[in-house]
Image (cartoon, rainbow, N blue to C red):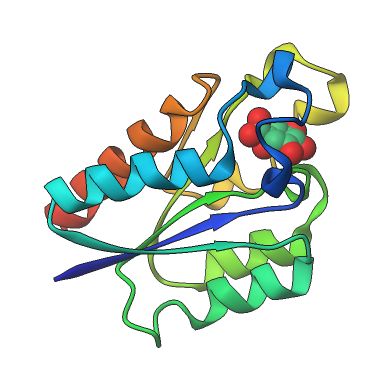
Length: 147
Ligand code: DQA
């Protein structure tokens, strides 16, 4: 059975009420439910984590291979733009990693235009709201199957 780790970064626990004009009205629980439905169809086990703490996210990524995950789906949220530590963890983890964002970071403030994660991710999907996650999971499963 394939096993995928989903990581939601800081403030994504607030989805539903957090700037709904940008991030939509779906809660994180609802997004997780959508992902679980897709995973069930694809016969994949999902483990889903959310953290507001950089070091904890680094630990999740760093332990993923040892914990028998084959891939990571991650929305690093604000750490996308600031965290060399998360980037280095992604680069070192030895797994396929798909980066996702709800919003189109390139159509927003300039400080969001740079992702430190994209250059070391297998691929990035952004701008489709909650659908970015389901598209990201599908792309990640294709990558893993092709390995
Ligand atoms: C985000 C975009 C980031 O710039 C922001 O800090 C987030 C969410 C997104 O999913 O659109 O927290 O990653």
